[in-house]
Image 1 (cartoon, rainbow, N blue to C red):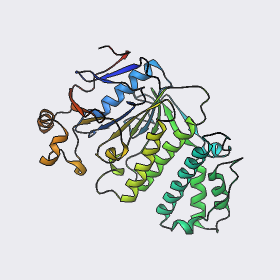
Image 2: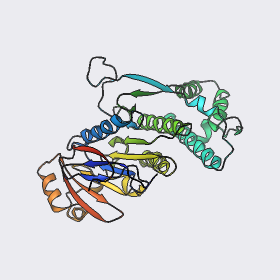
Image 3: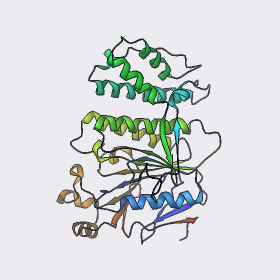
Image 4: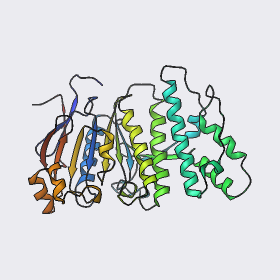
Length: 339
């Protein structure tokens, strides 16, 4: 990412600058409760501002508040597209210096998929599907496991697994001021996590096939059900793993990332430079506890205690600085640094 003048984002009444295209600033974590703060409005305003400049910039994965069925609602979806992962996996690993990393990530996604299948079926992974072979010069590992699934013993497990594989042919994305993959928070943890995998995997696959340079912003809005302190540890670990793949992707392509959570987990483990904390309600790092208040500022603690939804604090983890923000839904875009 270029160090030249960028399209700067300014957030809040105090206009906190976010150099979102810069390699060393392009990862932002926003921690805030969807009910106690105006986090969703802020994220929506950021997406809208950047979409106005380039309709191909914004991609969103999360439980955003849109009506995907209504055609009359002001929030209705303009159109939908389907990403075919099986078609993508039918392609070879290109012979290049990055082929080993590409192939490794392909296998990572497949192994997470099979692990989730085994967890959903409550069947040991080794008993569900044996190790499968594939020819990387013509295909990806998913195709090898699809062949293995077709040879499974007849029964409900085989039917279910084949149906799951077939669903990868139609991973649904919508376009509405940016490309959006919706997560249904009403689903049980494992089904929700499987949907998150499909969204992240299909986005990764898409970016690996782009022919023309494109600056992108990915907004990952992770449901609290996948990160809460009482969530199954194996679910949390896979969730963190999927997020980490997108974090690493910002170092490889012209991609910026907003990670939106309602909990502190897994933000500290991901080494993100920019943090924006809004009013939140999470037991994994409760701002109300005296030992944790140092992380924020006395003024912000007071405002959150009073129930403020539009106050936050911006932390630059590289510089060790804090800045209080108010009216955080105010978002502006300027060319270059205006100060």
